[in-house]
Length: 69
Image 1 (cartoon, helix red, strand yellow):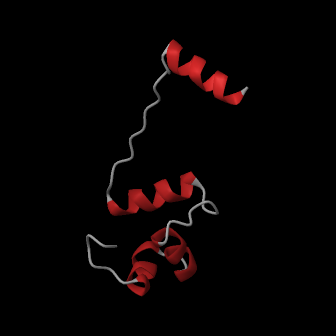
Image 2 (cartoon, helix red, strand yellow; image 1 turned 120 degrees about the vertical axis):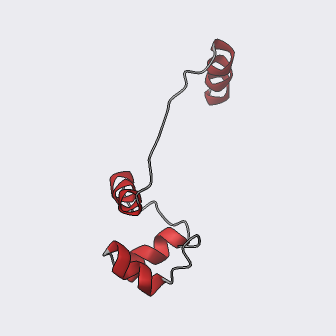
């Protein structure tokens, strides 16, 4: 929205979703919105979604286990 100077009402038309959902996303209240839904909105913009996972080192894993105990 910021990059394209879109208002919330214009975003409603562009993304085809309700204004409250636009507001939640804009204000970072995304815990009520699924990641699949957010990715589908990203796809509408032509954006790419990339993710990766990194295995922790033995030391990092040991520290986390120690913190949990």
